[in-house]
Amino acid sequence: MMKIAYTKPSITSLEISYVEDAIRNGWGASCYDYIHKFEKSFKDHLGVDYAIATSSCTGALHMGLAALGIGRGDEVILADTNWIASVAPVVHLGATPVFVDILEDTWCIDPRQIEAAVTKDTKAIIAVHLYGNLCDMNQILRIADKYDLAVIEDSAEAIGSSYFGNSAGSIGDFGVFSFHGTKTMTTGEGGMFVTNDQALFDKVLTFSNHGRSSIESRQFWAESIGYKYKISNIQAALGCAQAERLEELVQRKKQIFTYYYDNLHSLEGITLNPKKYGCESGYWMPNIVFDQKLGISRELLIRTFQQNDIDARVFFWPLSALDVFNSKNNTPNAYSISARACNLPSYHDITFSEQDRVVDVIRSLL
Ligand SMILES: *Cc1c(COP(=O)(O)O)cnc(C)c1O
Image (cartoon, rainbow, N blue to C red; front, side, top):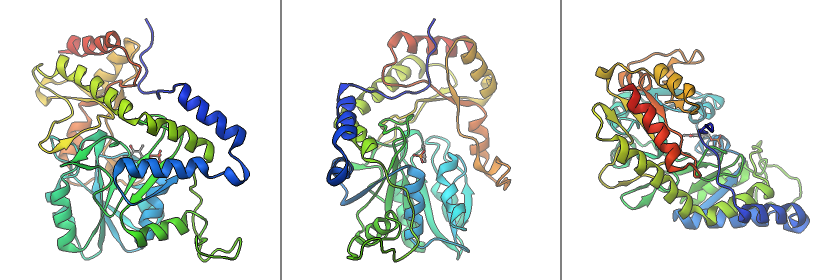
């Protein structure tokens, strides 16, 4: 029996030919060609005005938050259920993260908890479209408007997701994406900053170039201390090929989720990623949540998968539970759901019979 991987990218001869071309020819005067092409195709796909390719989503988020002027004394609200990358830049900038609870059905930030957490120091909300599920953007924008807060969409997991027809990442002040090897499309490591705000774009562009303005005529002249979060032309070549195949990559993710859904959703006490009115998920990661009354823990689940040569992973821990924060606050959904949920394998080349093996393990536990 072959081990079933958790995630791995879909690489074809198209990716290989673009990368080979970048390695052979993408130097000197051509050293940004694939980067610019990648940015253009990505912003066209999303329907936004500006895009800057980066070496990671974390870097894109760091620069975007810095460009908003977020720093010491400021508070940034985000969901307790999150990957560490969404909060690390907040801490690096000296601001204080404020963790609030998630909604039980979407596993995304609860707008009512945002409003309850707003103080005079609050500057921004980071809305993370967890596992491709959409945040309640209308409510989040309403709150942001009322208290004059910036809205950031961490869309690292939400390529192919849309909210009432608008692509995830195109709705807030800025959006960020990840092309880490586990994501729906990959450049190995990589990310993207997107916005419709020209002033914000100009600031991030300068930051991304070690503080050197694109209109500065003096060579090697930095006007501020910036960042070094650039993507390489070689990675961007891989990104160009993946961007050309994006519809196919997202369709396959949807198909994989649908197969799990068709085989699992009718089982008593089992919940999968939600289908919400007006929301279209890109289904980066199928997840299963066991109802409390079934008494099936994350540990039992992961162990049983391991025994069957299936690499499933735990649902995100509450960030407040980490020793580095140790700020255990009142986020019961974040604690409860993570203890009885897990990710299901969903790489593009998974076969239906491999998915059947995953389904059989879940059924055997019930
Ligand atoms: C993967 C991920 C990130 C980090 O992306 P990198 O490219 O590894 O920096 C950030 N936020 C979310 C929600 C993610 O899933």
